[in-house]
Image (tube, rainbow, N blue to C red; front, side, top):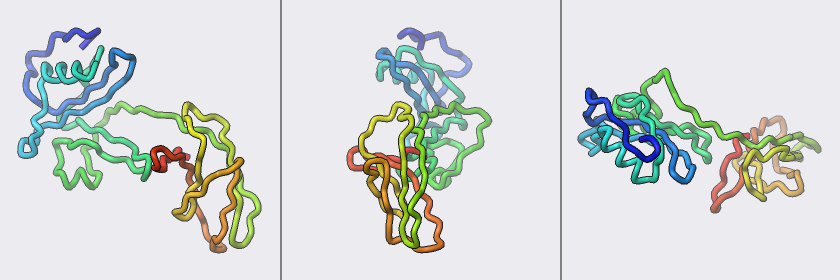
Length: 193
């Protein structure tokens, strides 16, 4: 699809297969998509190029590009809650149980979308036997927009007020990893830091 016009297709490949597509919408947005296929028992047949063009046109695509498809069609997204990388489609070369366990075909090419995380300066002070204070300052929001933010320590979320939080009831001689979050719709979202 180019400038809202369907383009000539490769007539040697008119069959339904899994597809990977990316493009730009008429309102300036961007999209990535996968269409699962070769899983006939699950109703996932894939699409041919004409069907794919109709699908992306229906979501307002202005331009769309067919990428590597077939068994290579895999979409992986970082889960903001768990920080794990989740396979969010059903690649055709593996069983559903393998996919649910994070197993996928190795593909030597990829399109990676990276969203910069906020830059946070952190230092720890007032370290006592069972408590410490975390001082944190957001140097650059990098496009994020939030007022309240939190640090997760020992599986507990602590709201950062005026750039610091004192955490108590800690065990001596214990390492406590921490991570920063913000809250959206009552859900904690990792800031990736």
